[in-house]
Amino acid sequence: MTSKLQTLMWVVFLVTLGEALKPGLSQACPTSYYSALMQLLPCRQAVGPFSPLPPSEACCVVVKSLGQPCLCSIINGPPISGVDRSMAMLLPAKCAANFGPCTPEA
Image (cartoon, rainbow, N blue to C red; front, side, top):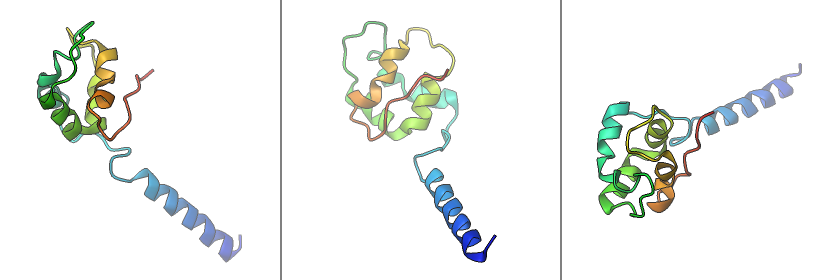
């Protein structure tokens, strides 16, 4: 390979790596599963089965502070008694959080 081609390949690799490591993307939840779950207690009424209640302001503050990695790890984790997973997946949108909704893991 020519020197220019090798340099170009390294530049493409480093740009791709930099995009993958941006804050908020590909990051794991910095807190434990149970700690994050306990912080989400203000959301329990909004995620109950067939709950017509919107999330409270306290719930939305927690959703936004935990961020997508923590919320998604809880939603995609083990079943939680009294929590409708479909309702929980709507929390980011209902709270106007600046991250996309969680998608269920296959």
